Image (cartoon, rainbow, N blue to C red; front, side):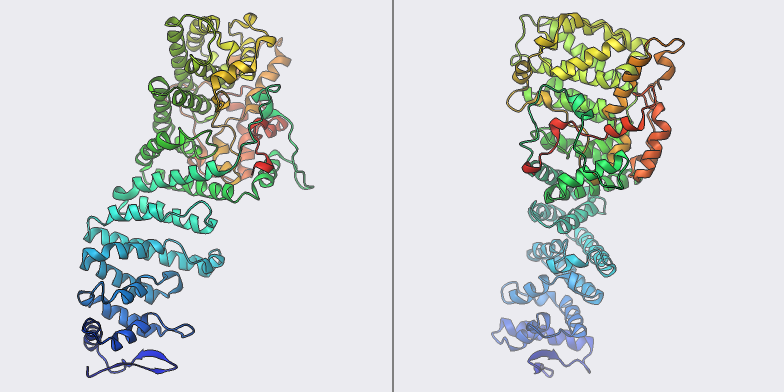
Length: 620
């Protein structure tokens, strides 16, 4: 060769390069590659040891970088069969363990190899995707300054390389998205690793090739949220206790873990969450992933892409979340996206749910859709009352038309969609009745249909969930809404009827936007959320002040009209607990569902979950 690759020092293969020019080095490397094909492996094996030193031998970084650059200019001499071990040793290198010089040389080689021949594209993409996550040994460093710096260095280079390859190899994004979904970590992967992997997916979604791979990334992330969600064992959560209504459960007494320094409801809520979720790793992973998704949605809104991203999320929701049996938390991704853009995303979500309720092929799908719609309309603080009333009126019209076309008497199984629609309508009214009835047109329209529906021989008051019926009738009396409360008595409210229409999966008790129990996610949801105590307190005050003169409902209600969307501070971004407490304390009286100021004790109870839906420690 004129110049040799040889091993001399401590058994380590080293290349004497003191007097070698770049041109000579290229010739040297190419000769080693050709010799391997011709059956002379000595110089090739020396080159291989430079890339993959023997155990215990410290690699020569300068030599490694120089050889990688030489190989980048010699990819035409590589043979996928004869040089398989060399290619593998390079592509299996973890960038997390390399300095920036080696990282840059690796990325240069990766690009040269991927663009030289189609047979190498998948290998190069796999190398880049494998660097989405650090090796296990690096996990402990992720929260340290060195680890944070290295993470940024790796991720930036990986994504810039993926973008460059995508420009030069047009079909590579299709292969990339398949590869990413196939290699996505399973639910038992350590939390830091799965978080970094999903962070890389979201970076792709919003990056230069997002138009090509973004939809696949979002769908895969939603699927992973559902996987984690359904893995949290809640078999013992739905305690079939019909002696206590769901509204009383949300206000009910819980065994709060009290520490000496805990005084307010927020601290109690955090302690309760920590108590039940601190030992559940998948619940914690789900919480962190949802927060990561929330932050990405905020970024999408700031960059003007939220509508596009929401379209994909909505499609994924219909295909997975909506059909998942009593999904507990994943659906809050849609709720939060709607809070960022109520006029667009908020309406599209409600329209989709109502369309599903009216037209889906399977009754269970329709029941799930209307349960989502009712829970959304009841809990979304960012929706104006005119918007909520529009859908309540549509539900009333649908139920009224159904009654007109049906004869016979009570049959929960045969008319389950009808009972689901009636229950949804009453559930929303329990939360929004006062604000809606304060508008004469809406009161007139509701009164027009509701008595005919409730007096129909199908008898929805005797079939729907007893706690909802009782609360609805009580509030209707407070607000002077004419309903046939005289035709039903407590001894007729048999739970077997609601269980029959709810079916084996008890869809009659499914309200998917009940308070979020995940501690990190809760701080994003809470500023946009209606708690039952906020509503109940106003009616309780009415019971005390019913005879007061000079006061009317309309005087104390903020009526939201079309286009008057409630403004969410910071565009719905997460805020500190102190900010939230101040917000609630200063603006409670302005909320559309709360005509009178709630006391702090009542507000605290509003942070609680219905006890029928509380996670049982044993089940977790």
